[in-house]
Image 1: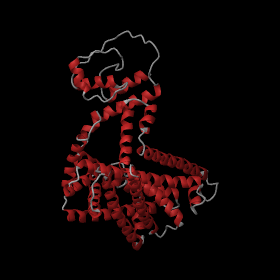
Image 2: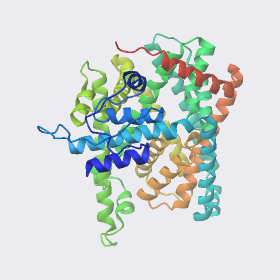
Image 3: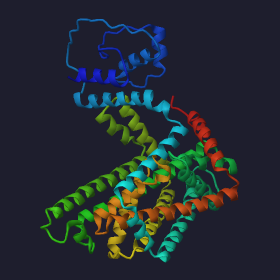
Image 4: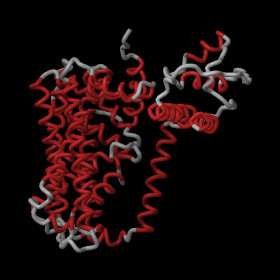
Length: 473
């Protein structure tokens, strides 16, 4: 069954004309084999399948004939681990052959526009947006303005954090200039899909301060790592707090999540179970972050050891390499305890101000009357999950992803209606995006940077920087 399933999937997805890709009785023309091997990535059971598939794609003749095969000795195949491993290899090759060649800037922009239009049409069909707009019109403009001011205060902290990261790479720059570079980069993410603005910062610091592209991309990676670590810890800490306290210590949230009585159709038990499960996920996330940080501060390769126990195919090796790069980025700053604490503290302050911004926006709605502790806890969690959703490069600036995640969390954890929650999510994201765009325009004028030119130059620079990365011999 495993053999027939594997060969059927290979013929369907890659595609291949062969009936059996795994028989060990094979012969190759030396010249043809070495030509194909240049692109073969797998080093485990999928190796010969990939050779055969790539050979067919390059026009080489592959003849198949029947042989009598008598297996001897025990099999070395792990039926569970290797089935998943080889299945992932089929998907990898399918992505490389079918999807990846079609991904370019034009298709990415088109896909982003289509997704946005579909989202708007679905919202018009299933959500009475008039009610959402009506709720938004009732928001207190003073509190909304205060939210914009609080969010603006987080930007100098971003520049200061970036300065501290660059100092670990032996570059000393002014925090004001770096704040402007970040403004331009984030503006690029709002305008272009697939987070194309991320690489703009490397272009700006290279063009205006002669910081090499590899250092610019490395510093950006370190910053992103600390952002993800901070967001994960924030969300996990709130989840654990809710689960461990049974939500009884947060005034008002007990009745909103579990219902005002235990007899509401079992909703109370289901809600409590959900919170405990979420708490377990949060605890696992924090433990994973702790392991990554400890691995980054140690000479031992914990990541490779754990992954190799689960699987030893090339895809597992790829996953281990990604996590190792992640820990390597942390290690850039984690090697210095003082710098690690400084950058970590700055990250926590930045994202706390992000949460306070959302809190002020939510409090601006007259119908929201939750206790402050409840409001703080819910906003910490909603903003964390909303920003994690934005990691997926499906729309410019994560528009739609953030609002959807934020709304679901607010509605799920509070008695706030969906129209108010969605209105608050839209207004919160709009406030942050307006501040970002305004800062980006001012920074582009100040530094004399063209955003479209920066995107094009940074794309070429990233390819060159990747090609110039040193390899282990």
